[in-house]
Length: 102
Image 1 (cartoon, helix red, strand yellow):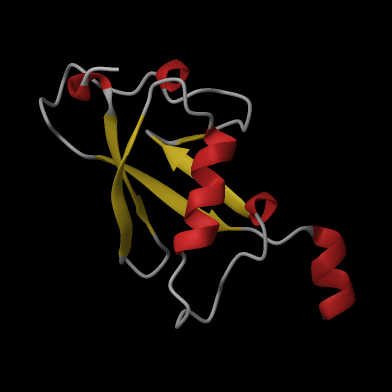
Image 2 (cartoon, rainbow, N blue to C red; image 1 turned 45 degrees about the vertical axis):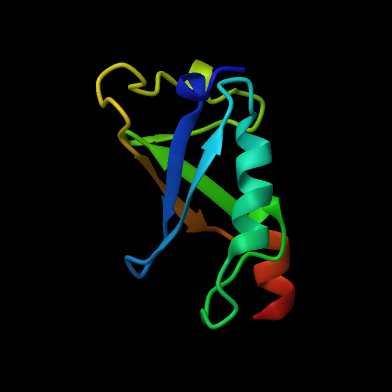
């Protein structure tokens, strides 16, 4: 795949810090991006996801579905030449876990 077809994406955390940027193929799924976020999450953060299911990725005000690909999420590939796309990574623990831990 040509280098220019890759999307450069960084993930903005709740405190304004970033993970990335990393390069992804338009065929990469949102689930794959979430796995990367969990792997790369800074160890010094108070709030941290335990699994990809705890992460919500938001781009352009929309929560992205796991089964969608980067290419299907209407990313502005052509609008920002060599620009980095910022997605917000939000930790949302499942209700079952929150009830047992609370």
